[in-house]
Image 1 (cartoon, helix red, strand yellow):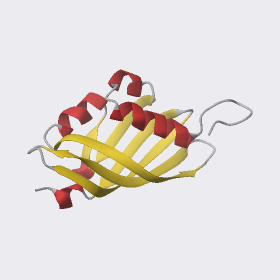
Image 2 (cartoon, one colour):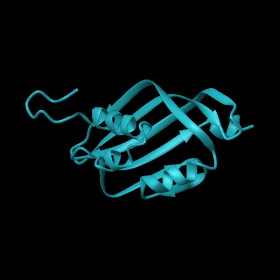
Image 3 (tube, one colour):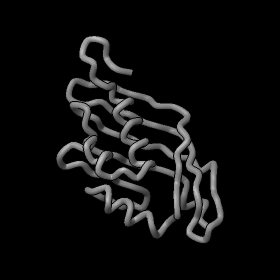
Image 4 (cartoon, helix red, strand yellow):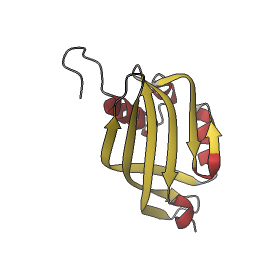
Length: 129
Protein backbone atom coordinates (compact mmCIF):
# COMPACT_ATOMS: atom_id res chain seq x y z
CA UNK A 1 0.00 0.00 0.00
CA UNK A 2 1.28 3.45 -0.79
CA UNK A 3 0.66 6.30 1.56
CA UNK A 4 -2.00 8.58 0.09
CA UNK A 5 -0.26 11.86 0.84
CA UNK A 6 3.31 10.98 -0.10
CA UNK A 7 3.03 8.34 -2.82
CA UNK A 8 5.78 6.43 -1.00
CA UNK A 9 5.66 2.67 -0.61
CA UNK A 10 4.85 1.23 2.79
CA UNK A 11 7.57 -0.74 4.52
CA UNK A 12 5.69 -3.98 3.72
CA UNK A 13 5.46 -3.07 0.03
CA UNK A 14 9.17 -2.27 -0.04
CA UNK A 15 9.91 -5.72 1.42
CA UNK A 16 7.51 -7.46 -1.02
CA UNK A 17 9.09 -5.71 -4.00
CA UNK A 18 12.58 -6.65 -2.81
CA UNK A 19 11.62 -10.30 -2.31
CA UNK A 20 9.99 -10.49 -5.76
CA UNK A 21 13.08 -8.98 -7.34
CA UNK A 22 15.30 -11.46 -5.50
CA UNK A 23 13.14 -14.40 -6.57
CA UNK A 24 13.59 -13.25 -10.19
CA UNK A 25 17.36 -13.26 -9.45
CA UNK A 26 17.64 -9.62 -10.50
CA UNK A 27 20.46 -8.85 -8.09
CA UNK A 28 21.12 -5.41 -9.57
CA UNK A 29 17.46 -4.47 -9.18
CA UNK A 30 17.28 -5.96 -5.68
CA UNK A 31 20.37 -4.05 -4.58
CA UNK A 32 18.51 -0.77 -5.17
CA UNK A 33 16.34 -1.62 -2.13
CA UNK A 34 19.35 -1.86 0.21
CA UNK A 35 20.57 0.84 2.59
CA UNK A 36 24.28 1.47 3.00
CA UNK A 37 25.62 -1.04 5.50
CA UNK A 38 22.82 -3.59 4.83
CA UNK A 39 23.36 -6.94 6.56
CA UNK A 40 21.63 -10.32 6.32
CA UNK A 41 21.67 -13.10 8.90
CA UNK A 42 20.51 -16.57 7.83
CA UNK A 43 20.17 -19.85 9.76
CA UNK A 44 23.40 -21.05 11.31
CA UNK A 45 24.35 -17.40 11.93
CA UNK A 46 25.51 -17.09 8.32
CA UNK A 47 26.01 -13.37 7.75
CA UNK A 48 26.25 -11.50 4.45
CA UNK A 49 26.62 -7.93 3.32
CA UNK A 50 26.02 -8.46 -0.41
CA UNK A 51 23.33 -10.29 -2.34
CA UNK A 52 25.98 -12.16 -4.33
CA UNK A 53 27.36 -13.61 -1.08
CA UNK A 54 23.89 -14.95 -0.30
CA UNK A 55 23.50 -16.49 -3.76
CA UNK A 56 26.94 -18.11 -3.54
CA UNK A 57 26.13 -19.55 -0.09
CA UNK A 58 22.80 -20.95 -1.26
CA UNK A 59 24.41 -22.87 -4.16
CA UNK A 60 25.59 -25.45 -1.61
CA UNK A 61 22.10 -25.84 -0.11
CA UNK A 62 19.55 -26.09 -2.96
CA UNK A 63 19.05 -25.62 -6.70
CA UNK A 64 16.10 -23.27 -6.34
CA UNK A 65 13.72 -21.92 -3.72
CA UNK A 66 10.41 -20.04 -3.77
CA UNK A 67 8.48 -18.41 -0.99
CA UNK A 68 4.74 -18.57 -0.48
CA UNK A 69 3.62 -15.79 1.84
CA UNK A 70 0.94 -16.30 4.47
CA UNK A 71 1.09 -12.78 5.91
CA UNK A 72 3.12 -9.65 6.49
CA UNK A 73 3.14 -7.88 9.87
CA UNK A 74 4.43 -4.33 10.15
CA UNK A 75 5.38 -2.32 13.22
CA UNK A 76 6.02 1.37 12.66
CA UNK A 77 8.40 3.56 14.61
CA UNK A 78 9.71 7.08 14.01
CA UNK A 79 13.20 6.03 12.86
CA UNK A 80 12.48 2.68 11.17
CA UNK A 81 9.75 0.14 10.56
CA UNK A 82 9.98 -3.58 11.19
CA UNK A 83 8.33 -6.01 8.78
CA UNK A 84 7.88 -9.72 9.46
CA UNK A 85 6.83 -12.01 6.64
CA UNK A 86 5.66 -15.55 7.32
CA UNK A 87 5.12 -18.44 4.97
CA UNK A 88 6.56 -21.59 3.47
CA UNK A 89 9.44 -22.49 1.20
CA UNK A 90 9.34 -24.82 -1.78
CA UNK A 91 12.00 -25.70 -4.30
CA UNK A 92 14.52 -28.26 -5.49
CA UNK A 93 17.33 -29.79 -3.43
CA UNK A 94 20.81 -30.28 -4.87
CA UNK A 95 19.99 -33.93 -5.72
CA UNK A 96 17.04 -32.85 -7.88
CA UNK A 97 14.28 -33.88 -5.46
CA UNK A 98 11.65 -31.32 -4.56
CA UNK A 99 10.63 -29.90 -1.21
CA UNK A 100 7.72 -27.82 0.00
CA UNK A 101 5.94 -26.70 3.13
CA UNK A 102 9.09 -25.61 4.98
CA UNK A 103 8.20 -22.82 7.41
CA UNK A 104 10.06 -19.51 7.37
CA UNK A 105 10.00 -16.08 8.98
CA UNK A 106 11.92 -13.10 7.62
CA UNK A 107 12.37 -9.94 9.69
CA UNK A 108 13.36 -6.71 7.94
CA UNK A 109 14.22 -3.29 9.29
CA UNK A 110 13.15 -0.60 6.80
CA UNK A 111 14.20 3.06 7.04
CA UNK A 112 13.48 5.68 4.37
CA UNK A 113 12.23 2.95 2.01
CA UNK A 114 15.56 1.09 2.21
CA UNK A 115 16.27 -2.26 3.84
CA UNK A 116 18.68 -1.89 6.74
CA UNK A 117 18.84 -5.57 7.67
CA UNK A 118 17.23 -8.95 7.16
CA UNK A 119 17.10 -11.81 9.63
CA UNK A 120 15.87 -15.22 8.46
CA UNK A 121 14.59 -18.21 10.39
CA UNK A 122 13.39 -21.43 8.75
CA UNK A 123 13.05 -25.18 9.22
CA UNK A 124 15.16 -26.03 6.16
CA UNK A 125 17.84 -27.83 8.18
CA UNK A 126 15.13 -30.05 9.66
CA UNK A 127 14.13 -31.10 6.13
CA UNK A 128 17.54 -31.71 4.54
CA UNK A 129 17.97 -35.16 3.08
